[in-house]
Length: 140
Image (cartoon, rainbow, N blue to C red):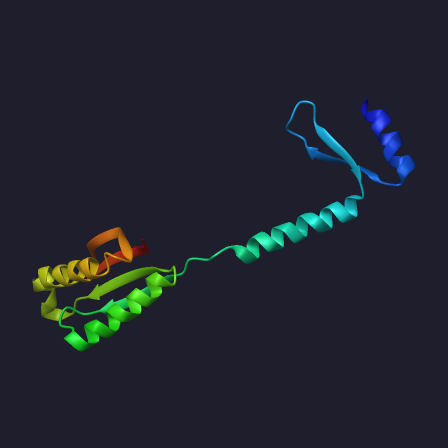
C-alpha cells in the first residue's frame, strides 16, 4: 500500500497514520488514534520507572582506632545497606599521627571486606586519597 493510500484510509476512519518503526525498510506504520497511542506510551514509561530500583551510595565513616562495639555497629549497618541493594562507601579517616600508621587502617578495611564477603564484592579497593582511605562495596 502506498503512503498516499494509507493517508486516505486513515482520514476516512477519522484516525491518524502513525509511524511505529521509522528505521526499518520499509517503515512500519499503523492507523490509530495518535492521542491514545501517546497516552499508552506514557503509561508504559511510567510503569517501567516505577519498577526500577535506584541504587543509592551509602557512606560509613570509621577511624583506625575504632573500638570493637562501634565496629560491630558499623558492620551491621553496612550489611543492612548491602542486603537492601545499596552500594556502601567505607571511608577511613586519619588524623594527626594516625597518618604514620596507614597499614592499621588498611588491615581494618580488609577485615571488613572479608566479613562482608558473603553479601558484597569490592568495586573499588582500599586506596589512600589525602588523609582518608576509601573502599566501595557493591551487593553480591
